[in-house]
Image (cartoon, rainbow, N blue to C red; front, side, top):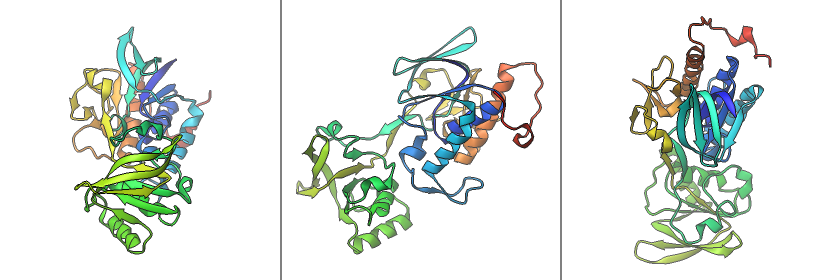
Length: 333
């Protein structure tokens, strides 16, 4: 489907870019490698509070995404989820983007809002893991309530593992943390809270252990085998495994588009967020310029700069005057 702008990435910054483009009368499509909108807010911390969003002293990741989706809804974006970009070409000033599902999307301009790139979970090396994924093995928590009364095993030693162990203690029937080291890579206050819950018997700690095997049937785990560094083993009763080993991010096909790439970021002009290729813009964490702050707030500002930059790019020679939403209102269809 042809649109004025194709946004690659449906995280918070990509969603706000829909609104900013829509306010300028630009029609938008959005493609994302994840099966739902929200990016890392949905994948990593849907129920964790965020404290630095203007006008919200505190807002959960999932609620922020919901509000951004509602804000974008009047502009009727087309979402293409669960697919990543695989190729790019330009014909007669129109960009053609192919996706991993065989879709061909066309647009006059492109906004890359891909964060650190297309990402997916680092999976533990367990036999038949795929038989349990999405049924009793998960790499993210979408709803705390789904784990009420469950025997939950959490594997990992970072913020996600510690935070969700704290959050699920008391809600789940049992919470066990499995980590290969006694030291955790999480915020000091979170570790303090976790240690207090361990002392109170509300969280069981298994260190230094690693996952060895899953036992169960028809996608439902019944037990998890773990092993220490000396070969000693334990069997944990479990209904659910939450595996938090981080996300693997890569630019994928974007890396071959001839953009100025430094590590995992793309250099842009901060005034417009345009890359070195005319018609391709980048915003949010994937965009870099001097003194860039990697904050959602900064990404929102990038989205506004890019939308106005695209308006000037698509309509060269026209004079535009900035209008405020309070006087302009939403564009009529």
